[in-house]
Length: 368
Image 1: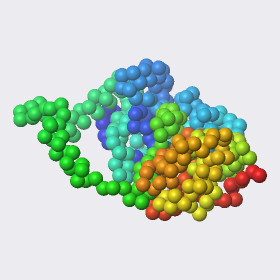
Image 2: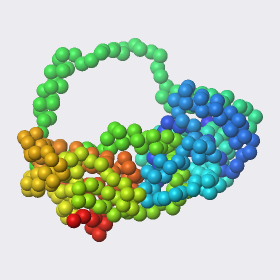
Image 3: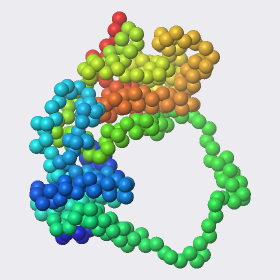
Image 4: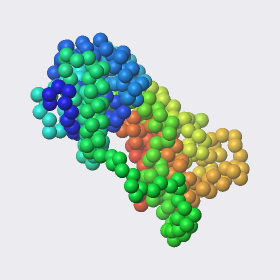
């Protein structure tokens, strides 16, 4: 790759960090003093150009400690860690962090480059890459990089200037609407007793919007987990889960973290926690009275018609209410710490099988 020429590179998909596609990344195999000096000299202008004009984030590893690795991110990924001193890990960070994940690339001769996400394939991520010159300003090279990307994209997806024969309409015609309604009527299939189970993956395993936002904030630069895993040994340290006398959910080994849930969500959670063998969604109606009993112990609310209607919906396998509750339960954990640990605490299960909480029973403590 010669300077200021474009090529495509592939990045392994086993990176657990979920690379953020909205960023431009500086990567080098060996330290280039001149380029790093230029980047640091122009850093403010680079960030302004990339953020304000290209609507991307700039990822430059040596500055990671200024914004990326902070207590909030450490706490999220390592809830069991205490009093981590970040300064002693600075020497472990360099711009070669991505080298081990490149596919079919001569890593020894890989020049210092900017890379930017192009697309995702089944087995890899595809990135544009442009080698950098020491003799041209970095901001100018960013503009060259984006120009080359646009030219490449036009070659891949040529746009015809001819509009002959193309008709435009704002929406479907009245006739098309009627035909669509008829098709929808024909396609309608009444829900079965396995309705909730069939939609478990698509509903309850989707994070809610505020969780997405929180995780996005924690991964502002998109590679936080990759870097953190490089800095610290990631362990599957599971905390005990304590249900207090007042029905609080406490993780004492995660710095006494309390998991907050709405009363009805917590009632569902405690129901599944009681039944470690799991519960088939189609059998939920068998647990209706127990769910009412659990809910009655969580507060001073009476079992009024609204509450009973809610419990009716939850225990009805023909409705989606149980999936919504499972989604909120998952949210309660994932917004506090990373999913590779949180999965042990929320309700999971395969289609057609009992849904359960997989946390080992010896880690579950009910205060008396």
